[in-house]
Length: 434
Image 1 (cartoon, rainbow, N blue to C red):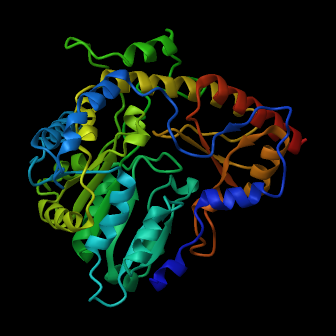
Image 2: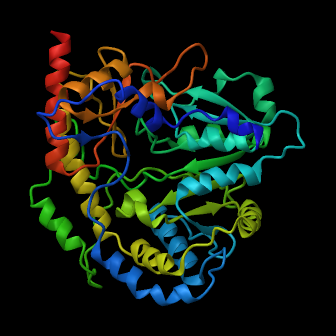
Image 3: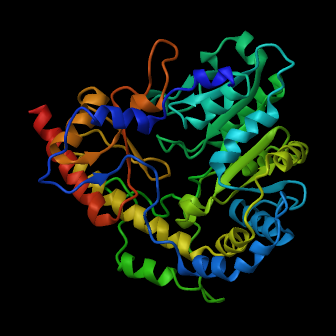
């Protein structure tokens, strides 16, 4: 067997299962999970309809590059979303089966094992796929602690020059998991300068880019609660959209890597590849549909790798994907649902916990009054609410684990369950602090 498999750590949810195996949850409460970032909002009906209408495509082998229509829809969306010229659909865009598998596979294609001691850099805390991809590509992962006192900004001075000299790939996540930080233009400028200096490739994970707050933060700390019937609006959004469906307000859209590159005149996206997905945007995690876009040379080599990997997108999924990228009305409704939950949850938690609204995404990254593992275990035991200890999402680096004494709350359940979970967390937090 590949000896690098021995280097892989248990996935965070395996650790969580072991932690909870020591206790039994309080049966007086129904279970509510805020631990896994799996969207629970309804999948729009028009996407389901496009999927079933495309089933005849199952009679054909799909190509690795996907159809012209699919790549064209993704390229058009990128151009419209980021106010940039649409990337070349043939050379700068590639459909993938969800961003997770592409983020993992990308390191296998990028890392040059003939160079001594290759390094992959990642933020810390981080999405564990980055570490596994580095290890199984024969590289050594190094971590940059992202801390609240530093605004969750990557501090490149944490790693010595000799590590940067060996760095071949850096993963960044914006909006960040778990902290929701959106990288600014200045942060991108610095990263591009580092890439030019050391020659490493940038893999920008942007799967949370469409979950953001369209309105200015309210006094309660979140986007202004929607005044209408959001549930009914989501139901309406599951219908096939009319051609004259009004488009949502532009809102405060997170800056993307391609957009930041264009601002600097880096129109060829040198050493930059962006990863995105429909899972969070369109509530279709089971479809496993995403894309990569950016540097045409890298995309071409990655396409070659994937041709041998055998991971072409199902033709029916391609049809549903085209429909999803071509519509924005359901995405606006989705954002309002999250904004409503954030507004209520922050209002409930702020008297007892130091909650801070993220820039974007659907996570709350909350500092705990006791050890994060003890907080999660006791909350599960006493109130049957599942949250993820922050230390499970990080590694010790520079003498600390930056996830310690934090928990991640994924506000993915329906509003009623999410609010009920927040009330239980507030009651529990008040009890352990008094």
